[in-house]
Amino acid sequence: MSVHHQCCGDHQFDQRSHCCCFDSEPLSPEPLNASCCASSGSNHLGIAPTSPKCMSGKQPCGLGACFNPTTERCCVNPTSLQGQSYSHDQTCCEGTLRHTPYLYNGASCGSQVYNPDSKICCAGKLSNRVLGKNLCCGTTPYGVEDRGVLCCNQTLHCEVEDGYQCSPGGHLYLPSRDMVCGTRVHLNDPDKHCCGEETYYPWNEICCNGHKHRGNKSCCGVKAYDPSCDQMKCCAGTLYDLQFQDRLSEEAQCCGSVLMEAGSTQTCCSAPGLDLLYPTQPGFTCCGHRYPNSSLWSCCAGVLHPRPEPHNTTKNVIPGPRLLPLGDLKTEVLCQSKVLVGTVESVSVKMNERSIVMVNTMYMQASRGHVSAMASPHYLTLPDHCSSPELVLGNTYIWVKNNYSDTISFISDLSDHSSPLHSILSRCSK
Image (cartoon, rainbow, N blue to C red; front, side, top):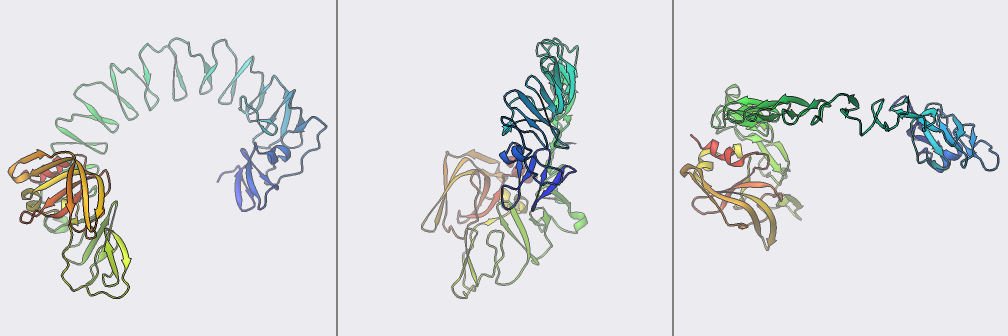
């Protein structure tokens, strides 16, 4: 993994922070503060040598050294792991400070040794200690009470006027004058907002995943398009120009981010967060994202169950509502049907009925311009739980009703749409 890593049995370890102990079987790396490291150290081959013989009252310090933990401190070079003892008023800089058998609770800054009463160690650089300068900004010491000093991303700025702050990118900015977009600083404009690292005017521009575009459009990933245009198709953030596909909008269907082939050669099976394409086969049907042989498998709400014996699938079975991407709903169905938009809060099953509790529910019939809020919570019942698609609590769905029977015929997950109402109404605007 790095030039500092060595083998230890079947594992590797960073010799700056671990050693290889023979105390365990099989061999395994242990942190340097482990008792076996403190007692034996470790060399560059990852072999734990025998502990150095120390006089009574002293403990091993790295490889080949001993120290008295009551009067001395042990500093271990992180490269060679050689140790050296120093008087108790000294501190390690840029290395490992060891107080056997555990790490010493003090500065841990290297193999150099310095007196913390007269020196300060900042990122491996020793400087003379000055009264009040007990903080580090990169390699430079400074004091919290220093006037006109500001540390941004380990860079010390001096003679800074009052009111300035650090941006995430490490730049100075004045909140009353500047605005920060990502890591960049721009002059403040009350009409502008952030779009990624840049600024944009929301009244005549649109921001799509950090990319700005002009005009009143909708987003498809980082691109913008007019959803009422029959020539463009958005599939889960991927925009397709149907002119190049030689397709009509109403014929084009998505399977996740993929534009499906024309005709019935492909079948898209969907589950929450997963869409898979299969070659269409007779006798096969979707069960969530799977496409099993329905004579061998039964399906209930996206869960497969093996049939004890082959099943005749030629009987008429009333299908449940289909889960489709919003863009695959035909315009006349979406705009002329009775539509519910709501967020699923709870789902329960009684016998074979599925009861759904929704909040923030609206009823709309876009072709007539009807939009009205429903009582909250709103209750919806699907008569066949098993034939209905799996729902995710907290996601927002559109429920398209059959105008004749008032049953649910289509369901679309709107959780990926930043503005569900705009997504619907823009399709029906023409």
